[in-house]
Image (cartoon, rainbow, N blue to C red):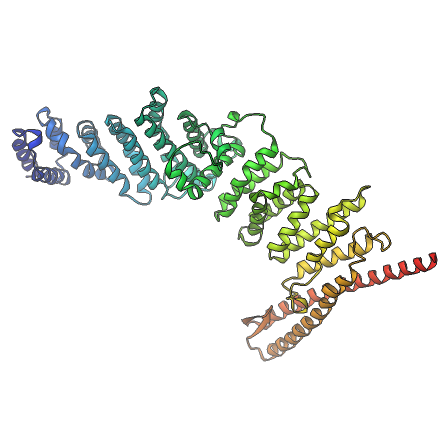
Length: 594
């Protein structure tokens, strides 16, 4: 019945001129053709499409059958013989139908699926889509629309993370990336071969450039790369990245020119969307490009060999900042790798303090602190700590001094502050051992730095448990200074500041310890009584109530706190003992001299 209906419609349209086809004819053709497919009359449908007499009708109306045919091809339960016929129908429709209508129809079909069907649809339709676009005159618009649609769909797919996931490629992203390169190549070649630089060619360049930058952001910003020893030339993301960077060079935007001009007032391209989206899209894309070149070594042979390590570090710091602002594990990891790669090229203590006047040279270490303190992944926290230490090592003395002041004022984390204080101690030790004192870690400059270290933020009311790491590091630094610097020499300025240190740090610490120990010992007594009655009760730690904790666990927490206070108290007592011994010894020496 459906075949007869279709043949009837075709017979009526055969006597009409192309311009006389009515909207009603299109609708009836679509319904009848769809019924033929649903009822399985595909051999008859194939013959109707092949019939030369129906060529004009198929050209104008046939694109309406693309959707039903493609949906059948995407169904896995079709018999091989039937699938072969569906492919024949599909190929004929692509060959005969109006390319303009086909383009829109194919793109709608690419946009339809979700999940794992996204890649199946793209892999099926990419080659026909390329064929259709090649027939169109307004190629720039068509290529741009197609690449944008394809990228939007691919960006919905999860990016495989591990080697196993890349090899399994459950969602087909790796296959799609490879196919997308093959889809784009002819249009890149067309731009390269066109020597006239016509307006249409420039528009096509813009669309390809936009696609390349989108690809650098997704999937390449989050994509993981196999170790080169493991990949054996089969890393799909390395291949995709290399081809994308190659496309940039081919269309007149070689990546050295792109990355070294990024951020400057004079742009290397005139494309409004890039200007507007720079902070969002372009910054991510450029950071991704820098990582691919400098860490993965993709196309690095195109870089000038004369660039100094300091210049490369300065260039990469803005990109590292972009990486560290993200929350994805793979992206943060790339930022740390890029930082390490850049810093290892530089000699220790060779990074001049003036570089800290560049915003990214302060925001990057602050970003490392955030990863160290907030990231839930231990390996990234440890790597960030190592990178912060490496960064400190590369700064000159004034740079170290400036960074220490900055981080002490901004980190708001006891463990980080303890780490900085330990670094200050190391720098003082190196200064005292040198023939010529380092003015930044001795004398008045050091005294100014010690004012940030040897004090309690809230006096005796400071939460000693929460600040225990910082307090212990401060006491150890003070003990070191008392031992190493004699009062008569006073190289560090400690002895002239001793009165302030006692008033701002030691005395409030004594009071705070007494208050804290009394509070926690009272809580231990309450917990022990609760244990006897076998009740659940709450305790207060750091001013916050922790409810319904079993008494055994409570006692462990409380005893741990009291142990911390005892430890602080013992170091404090030793520091005060050393101060007394040193001042008494100096006094006796001075009396003997007189």
